[in-house]
Length: 223
Image (cartoon, rainbow, N blue to C red; front, side):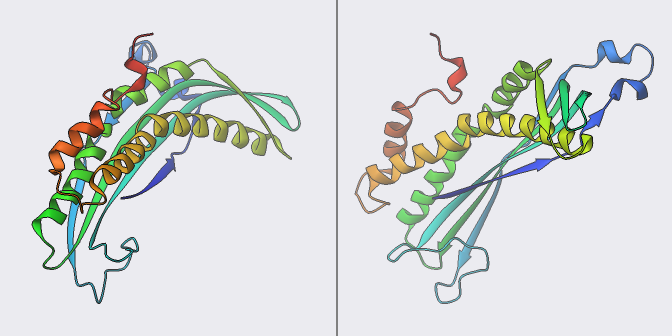
């Protein structure tokens, strides 16, 4: 199981209130989150000519499940220049869209047990994605009103630096709650099944994996 992540930076909007109709600002929520349904693609390949972009396999591997967690983020903020090279921005609104893409590669003629193993990796990724919207919403709400200071050779560069800090903060916290926990769970699954070579049923192994980490969103745990 391989994982990679894409963070798309949507153009930030400053002073967004100026383009809204009278009264619309009060009705507009500060945080807006959209969770897209998982996208799954299954590719059967010829081992002698694997498709471009497929993760490299280590023999005797004959399949792989590649799960990509993606977060698209838009930020509305106010900016206050402090000096010619320092800017303070205040987060006013956040728009987030969560996505997960699963690409399952299996060699032509691979046994059903291998296919079941890769499908199990898919299930694990989707398990940690199911509460993605709630996780993104909680992270975003905590940042509304927060201030980030940026520095640069110009005011524009300093503002960009401050915005990057906002985006990096969101990405770090969101991926810790989704992608990173999914990767750890998939590693546990491979350890339990010896990468599909053990006789244990895939669903039984999945149950053991989830039992070790039952909460998809760690922020819901009671302290």
